[in-house]
Amino acid sequence: MKNKIQSIYKETGIEPPNDDLNDDIKKDYLEAASILNKSVRGAAAILRLALQKLMIQLGGMGKNFHDDFEYLVKKGMPLRAQKALLAIKVISKNAMYYLSYQIRVKELFHLFNYIAERMITNSKNKKYDNTKQKKEIKRNGR
Image (cartoon, rainbow, N blue to C red; front, top):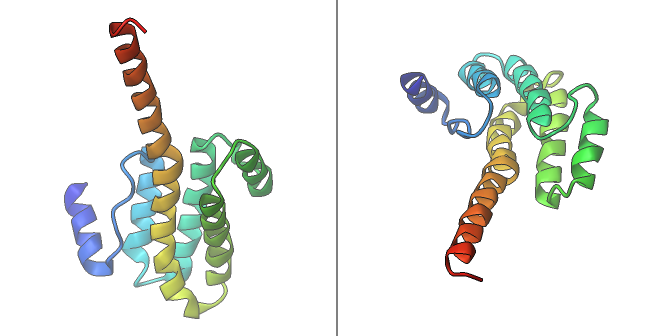
């Protein structure tokens, strides 16, 4: 898989998927990246599918984007992550109809990783930090 990621990066300049994404999301992300130069619309469609799966990983049901989005906003999703999610949804939808969207679709991969970093990786690190901090407090007798 590492060789595949390196070859996709060399061919497209697309960054690798965030390590904390579920494997099926990474697979879709890489497939979308691998066909970007051949089919912008195909890449956009696969990235939209990956977005649906990401919504599930973030705690949504994965059936209705708007319901999941509303749930994530109520759960406290940061404004920049909200905007990134909406950008992926809107631009990938439009890219399926307009061929001039190749540059914009390429940018969506970065936004996708931004959401994963902000919502998955950072929250995972916070849990780790909180656990570590609690252990230190217990050790110090506070």
